[in-house]
Length: 259
Image 1 (tube, one colour):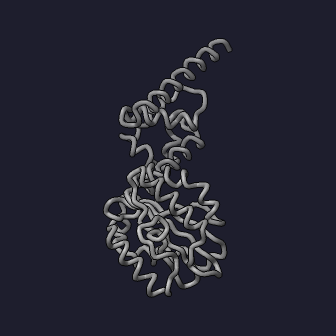
Image 2 (cartoon, rainbow, N blue to C red):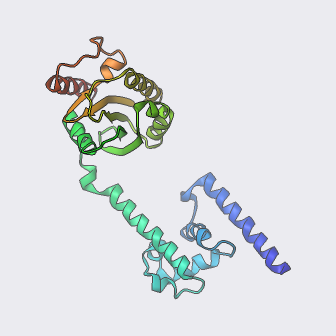
Image 3 (cartoon, helix red, strand yellow):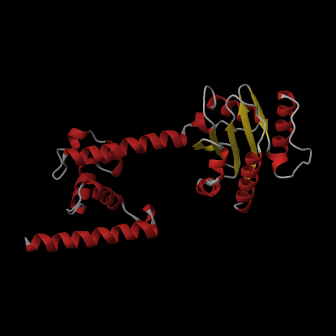
């Protein structure tokens, strides 16, 4: 028992050092077997995983080979339980989906370089939505979409309390441009004072981070309205709109200037 406790203490200290090192240098500072060892910590709580990581890579030839191996083959390796095999296979599946999404040329080639493309994308998100819903779209410098962030359901006032959270997400995603959107179910696409206040606050927060808030769209039934120009004082015409055609014209004129 005493030997087991001492051994557990040694392993615990080793794991703590591995995690600390990962936090300092990231994955690039680790060899493949070390990354696999770190991953195995999650499935094997209190045993040495270093030797198992070496055995797995030796058996399947590489880290990718381990993550792509069938569960029954993984279980044939000494020290690999069904739980460990399922854990490794799950990580492999996640990695495959990540790569497919990250490098899918169909997704990468879409450039949201016009208000029509942006409005069409957003309008599809608001079809038959009976509640007020807030989205934040994030784009890189080439106007490829990085993220479609569902901020919250409910009043834009609720989103107002999340301006910091939206700004932090945009910064962490490496966004260069952003678009805010929400809907007025059963109403008209005219901004309230709360809409204006949230728009102004987000515009200012993103500006500090050198991220451009290109527009804030309000959707209602089959109409929409861009409100940013009027909210932050870029124009002084007030907040009245003369119909969907005028709104679309305003959006087109403003976004083309910004892009």
